[in-house]
Image 1 (spheres, one colour):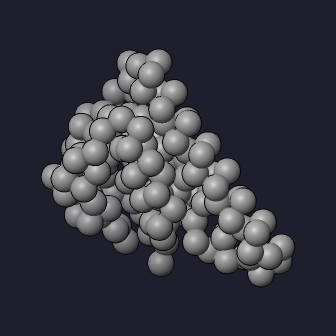
Image 2: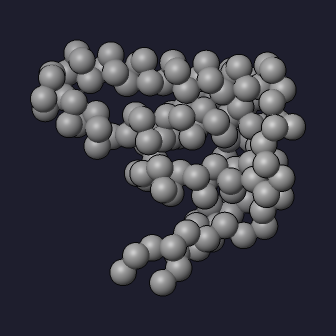
Image 3: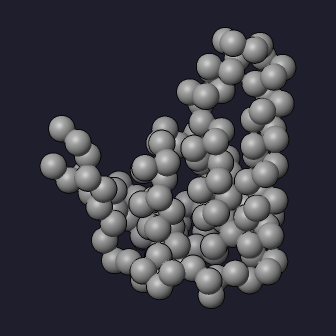
Length: 131
């Protein structure tokens, strides 16, 4: 069974959401979007490819890709239950800072040319969902 991620996060829809903000604000938005997105890394990759193929800057999409599996709500709840609120907040802050800095560095060094062609030019991104 195939779950078409591109129907939920189509290039047209994804370009409208974070496409309004640019630069460091775009990276912050991408990192925050990765935090609230209820996806593991197996779903973050197709969404990342959908973002880049829709024409969003690579730095913003990498901010999403870095923060999505690292600073998700489930891991924060687990950290909070094991180590307390302060450690969970510190972990989230460090994760978001890393995501924003990583995305900003990718933009500043103009590393788009090193992204694979299929990442930028994919028309349809589908992920296989096990039954």
